Image (cartoon, rainbow, N blue to C red; front, side):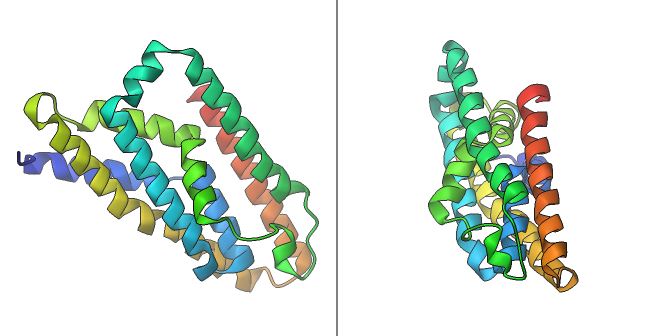
Length: 203
């Protein structure tokens, strides 16, 4: 069944705002862009795009109901997210950096890591749950609305996350010394840690 045109613009706006706003995945994207360049960060961006789209589909077709019935899974998710994302923040804050910028992160995040980051990202779960609850339609059009919302996010996520990778890459011309790059990465690590804490305890 066809989706009403009035559904598309609000869904696009929601997808863009939530995808481009600061969060763990975008902070890591900016850090990777600064340390390894835009092209080597693309696998992370692709993985994060696929990861969120699959999470949204999962939410739309039953995962949300499972989470509501088994509340303990919510706390398991929070614990896994805190460990996984906290590790990235710790590496970014504590790793020493010299003029070789690749020392801060040992390598750019892989596609699989970008995918898993979304599944362990509290912000992604909140956005997916909110999107399914707000921007899908009940009745015979429900399946079409879930698929349409997922397609919208698939199209919007990649350029939105890429903006952060490009900003990180563009910042390298101002981070010409090892000391400047070290403080940039530490700042990104603190921002990542702060975003995780904010979503875990206040989201």
